[in-house]
Image (cartoon, rainbow, N blue to C red; front, side):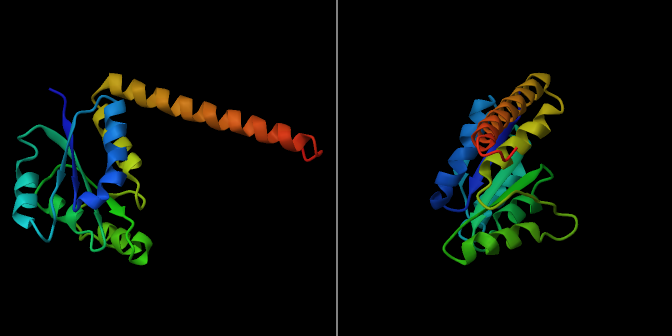
Length: 169
């Protein structure tokens, strides 16, 4: 049975950001579930989810929250599965508050943290972790990297051609 990813967000206002994680996982064929649970308003539900995640077939949890951003820490406190925090930008401090809340975890309760609004990287990190034991997924990741590289090289060639006319190269 394939492991799945839990995408947990503190509020449905985080959905536009976290939809990118869901889309990325779907593109790689990684199963997932999406839930709204708050570290502060529904702490019992968040703890219960984290406690039972392993036995329910999850292999990792992506926890997204803005402002106080304690959801990743709450998830990590109740499971030994990898937890990836996505600090979400809010009207306060452009998401720096969420970033600092997510990365400042005490020793022994790790939360891997991606960039503010970095849902795609959170999903890719889950794919990379799962690909340690899934060769097909590893091949899909390698193909994506190769396609990304080709796009950059194509853009570079266009820029070089444009500026070559000025004698810049």
